[in-house]
Length: 254
Image (cartoon, rainbow, N blue to C red):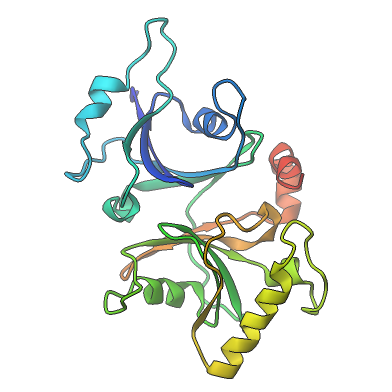
């Protein structure tokens, strides 16, 4: 049995070693050891055998050890900058979504959909940058676009979730939308219209907002990829969440 685990946190971006198993680690990230702070957490399991010259992995053996009272070491940070680009996609395991009160949902990798039929797409980029993007590009094409090394605005890898515009701006794109997002419905609609007018592949809805969405705004799942590969983590249907993950789903909708 491994004495430590490795996790790729995406908000904020960090590589973390911990003696806590995945769900306990999520609760620790979300509510802290003394429950004085709270916030949503998103993180990947990383192969515990992973190593790269970019990170000082010797720190794990030195510092990720039990405390004097035999309690586990909760976190040892190995990197907080340019982390995602230095972790190969094949080293990533399950993706964990943790609500702000510490309920954890694990997502397995799945096969990406073969066809995307949407006219418009709405993406919340989560790592390493985090604007909200309206686009005509489907997730696979958007990943290639965002990681294109010939573009001055590219990133080596991108992690994002596809949102359901109708859940935010209303099914007729005229409704007030979710009160949790306030001014976004009109801006999203405006960006979709600009995609038509300018024949552009993407339009930035919001440059600075991180974790724009509520969990129930996720349309089909989360994606992470680069120029050569795309990983997909399907998001369960509302009925499956209500049936099989009731506590998480209840927390996610608060």
